[in-house]
Amino acid sequence: MKNKNEKGFALVLSLILLLVMSLMGGALIVISAGDHSANNQSDDYQQTFYVAETALLEGERFVLNMYMGPYKTDGTRDLANRSMPSNQTTAFNGTMRLGNYETSGSNASFTVNYSPTNSETYSFVDNGNICFNSFPEINRTDFKVIEDKSNQKGAISNNYGSLLAKALASKGEDEEKDEAERLKFYYYEFFITRIGSAPFKGTGASIKKSATDVANDGMAYRIYGCGIKNGDDIDPMVVPLESVVVLPK
Image 1 (spheres, rainbow, N blue to C red):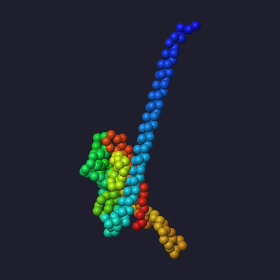
Image 2 (image 1 turned 180 degrees about the vertical axis):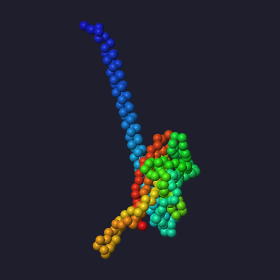
Image 3 (image 1 turned 60 degrees about the horizontal axis):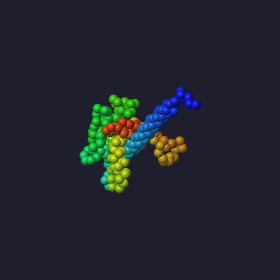
């Protein structure tokens, strides 16, 4: 005998189950999308970190080239222009010199946005001080960077993708060249200051038993480097790093 009170119960139960399954499915989609976004952001940070490490390496090479003499076109060092880098007399305001940028042709179309109201083509990227501002502990009124013998300051901005594109121009695969184009939204910048005398450990021999190979006869330089991801319709990301190099006097 059928109970009239149970008439339509299966339909109601089906609707409830459908609602529950829909909510669970929607929740899973939201969680999956959040994980995907977090993974993308983590990948972007990791890439920007690698670019920042490139900035430190390039800064260290800049100091060594000044100390040992820059390379000439024949592959030998220009010993006449070697020097122990000194700081400029004027304070540094964050303006970078352009490194490997091209200011014309098809590679001059990408942009850097240092602020929502200031969209600049990369040929004017040296007017941005995003890297300098990433180190708030710096004394802004009396901070100086090193300069070479031609009075060029040791504060340089480069495009990471352009660096790779130049290296892959002759022998790179198409996929590698496409990746280099994508990486043109990444930039590495460094600026260097001379911080003074520091202990330097060298090798050698002495007839004096109390002698040591550690002495205060080195000169220390602090290298500030940044990896930057930026461009049109891109959330900016900056990773600042720093290191210290000690050269023998």
